[in-house]
Length: 70
Image (cartoon, rainbow, N blue to C red):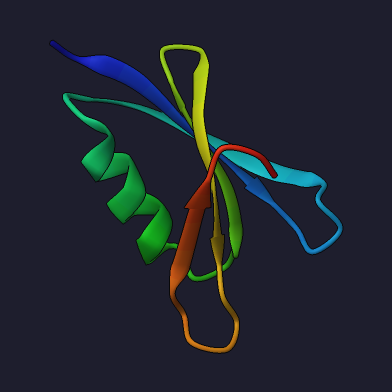
């Protein structure tokens, strides 16, 4: 089954800067797409209009933290 995913990117002031929408069979592709985008360190991941999680990339070590709330 194909789902519609949305990545919503935020700046350092927590203001939305852009959105990308695409279809995929699972959220794995959406996570890899956010991971490849070095221009943003804060991302919300949505699936079929439902927010799945908020991801934030650490400036210090480049690792992602995934959580329910911003």
